[in-house]
Length: 85
Image 1 (cartoon, one colour):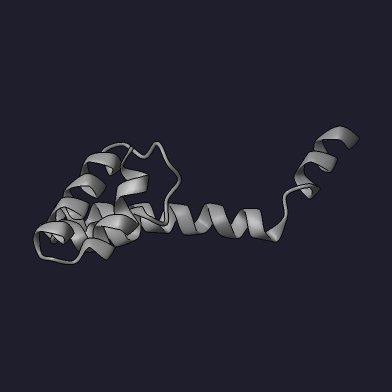
Image 2 (image 1 turned 45 degrees about the horizontal axis):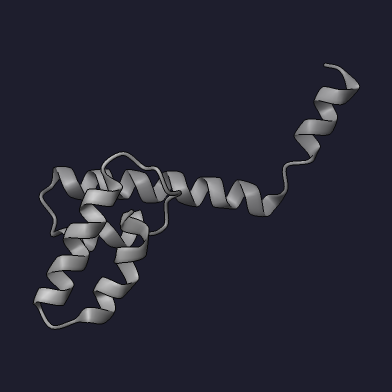
């Protein structure tokens, strides 16, 4: 390994690793909930902890936001709607 390669590895900080791990685990949880037929609101909670661009996340978040507004809980819609783009 070159000195430049080892420098790149050491530049990864604990918060970056933690964020990557949280994103991966949240995506896995969302997939499992989806497969098990969980309500979109439960899935959305986990998708909010993933990075934007997650396949299918926008549609699920839009659905969860719509259901929250339909239930009379616009706060839930306000939370999920910005990420649903």
